[in-house]
Amino acid sequence: MGQTQCYKILSSHLVEGELKKGESISIKIDQTLTQDATGTMAYLEFESLGIDKVRNELAVSYVDHNTVQVGFENADDHEYLRTVADRKGVIYSRAGNGICHQVHLERFALPGKTLLGSDSHTPTAGGIGSFAAGAGGLDVALAMAGMPFSLICPKVVEIRLHGKLRPFVSAKDVILAVLEHFGVKGNVNTVFEYTGDGVKTLSVPERATIANMGAECGVTTSLFPSDENTRAFLASQGREGGYVPLSADEDAHYDELFEIDLSTLEPLAACPHSPGNIKKVSELSGMKVNQVLIGSCTNSSYTDLKKAAAILRSHHVHPSVSLGVAPGSREVLMMITEDGTLETLIKAGARILESACGFCIGNHQSPGTDSVSLRTSNRNFYARSGTASASLYLVSPETAAASAITGVFTDPRETGADLSSISMPEKCTVDDSMFLLPTFTEEIKRGPNIGEPPKNTPLPEIVMGHAVIKVGDKITTDHIMPAGARLKYRSNIPHYAEFVFESVDPAFPVRAAEYRDKGESGFIIAGASYGQGSSREHAAICPMYLGIRAVVAISIERIHQANLCNFGILPLIFRNEEDYNSIDEGDELELLSPLASLASGEFTLRNLSKKKEIPLSLFASEKQKAMLRAGGRLNEVKNI
Image (tube, rainbow, N blue to C red; front, top):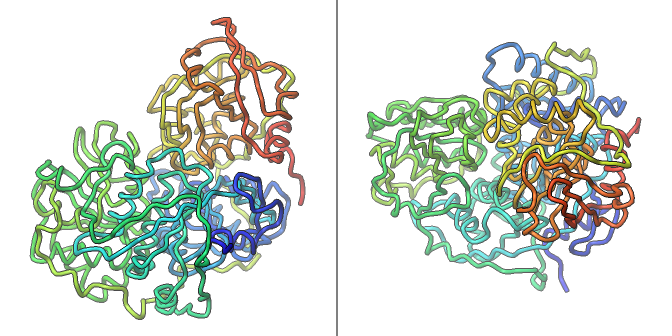
C-alpha cells in the first residue's frame, strides 16, 4: 500500500515512535519561525536552556504582530528580539518586511521540509508542500535547540478537488466550504491532504490561503502536493533549486474522503462569531457594511490585491465605509507599487496599512460600536477586533472590494470586472535587505517590561481548591488572553496575567490570585473545544501564574493541550460529558491521588460542595505525563 504525502514527510523525519494513527511520535524539525507576539517568551525560554546558538537548519524571527508602538514596551521587545537573534544565530525579519507566513512562503518554505512556528497559522506553508505546524513558544524553543517535536501520529483526510473555480470565486471560498463541512471542532490530530485534478488549477498563494485556514478546523496541518505550479512559484522567487516533486502515491490509503467540485462553489462568508458559521454571500446581500479590511496572512498576496484593485478600478469607496488594505509583505507592496495597483487602490479611497498582522489581532482598526466589518482575515472570534459589539464577517478579497463600493454586502459576480488576466508573475520583485543575518556579536538588550518565564511547582500529592471559573464551548485563546492593546505586556507575565479572561469575567485574575495566595489550587471548568484559535502559550502561562493547576473540559484543542502540559497544568477531560453540569463556579474540588493517577490517565475529581465524584481522563503522552509530574517542561529541561 502506498503512502500519503503526509506520511512520506513524517517517515523521512521520524525520530521516535511508529507511524501508526493515534500513537505518539517525535519528528525532526528543519525550520522554525517565531513572531513578536509569541517570540519574546520563546527566546526567553530558549535562553534558559543555556545554548550558545540554534541547532536546527533555519530559524527566523519575524516582527509583524505588535508593530504599533504606543509606549516603550513593543520597541523594547523588538530590540530584545533583534539582539537575541543576532547572538543566537537566528535570521531577523524587521518590522515592515511583512507577515511571517506570507514572507516565509515567499523566501524560505520548501516542499518536504518540516516547519514549526509559534503561531497557529504556520500551516500556511502547507501550500508549498511543507509539513508546517503551529505550536507554543516553548516547543519552538526546544526545536531551535535541536530537540524533536512530539505529536500524535495523525489521521489523514483526503480532500479531493475537481474542476475549476468560476470567476469571482476564490480560494477563500474553498476553505470556507471545507469549514462548513468539518466545523471548528472535532478535528484534533488530523491532517488535511488536498488531491485531485482541481489542485493543478490553484496557484501556490491560493493553496496557502486554504492551508492557512485549515487551522480554524483545528487540524495539525494541511498539505498540497509539490508540482509544476510549485516549481513556477519557487522560480518566481529565485529559489527553483529548492524544488522537489512530492505527492501521495496513487494507492495511498486515507482515513476519510471529502470531495469538492470547484466549479459549483459560489462566494461564501463566515458569519459572527466563528469561522465555521458559513453562509452564501447572496444570502447576506444588502446588509449594511461599515468597514472593509483586505489583508492578513490569509489573503494579502500579490494576486489577491490585484483582484481587489481590478474591482475597485474607476469606483470610489462608499461614503459610509472605511476601507483599509494591508499588503502581506514588502515584496507585495513593492510589486503593486511598480505596476500601478497601489495607485488604483489609493484613487479608490483605500487607506494603505502597514504590511503587518495589525487589524487581524485587534492591534488597530477596531470597528465602531455595533458596526459590520468585512475582513479577508481568518478569525472573527468575539471581541478579537477590539470591539465586542461589532459583527465580523470573513470574506474573499473579491467580496470585500465589491462591498466596499456599494456599502452593503455584495456578491462580486455582480461587478462585471475583468479578472481573467490576473495570475502569478513569472518573476517577483525580490529584496532581502530587511532580513538581518546573525553576526553573533550583539549584546542582548532587555527593557524593563521583559521578565523571566515563570516556572511552576511539581505536581503535589494533594490538589485541592475551587472552580475559579466555568465557561462554555469554543473558548478561544483570545477569550483567555486578549491581544490588541494588552499584547504589549506579553513579556511581563505578572502584569499580563491581570487580563486573563478579560472579555469573559474581568474579576477572574483577582479571584484566582486570592485562592493561590491561600495555598489552594485553581480549576478552570470548560465545555467543548477549549483553547481553540491562536497558539499563544500565554493562555497557559498566565493561568499557571495565577495558581491554576487543572483545566477540566469536555474537549481541549491540540496546541492548547500541549501548552497546558508544557507549563504543568493538567488537561483533564470529562469521561461523561453530562458531568460538566455537576460543577459550578466556586465549588470546592479535590483531585484524588493525582500523582498515582498520572500513570493510568484515569482521575477522579471529588466535588466537595456537591458531594459527588466525577471520573476524568488525561489524554497525554508519556513525555507529557513526565512534564506534568515535574510541574512543566522548563523544570525538566536543564542545559542541553
